[in-house]
Length: 107
Image (cartoon, rainbow, N blue to C red):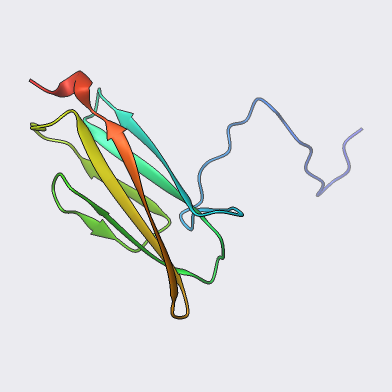
């Protein structure tokens, strides 16, 4: 019996990432490389939803201040791209680097 207005957990439904990122106890960046579409997608695992984020990467020098960071890969010269994420809460900032393996598309 379903109660109107009540939602039930369905383990077959995949959770879509939030544009704000995910709340975590330690700053992290979850990055995935899509070789078919030559794209890297990263999701921030931030320590506060009130923090300011700043993403950057060392391939095209793209930047973003969102919880999700995506950029295209074109003719990478190296097999690894480093994604940097900085989280600031007021004047206290933490910075991490996440290497992403793109060797599948390096000529």
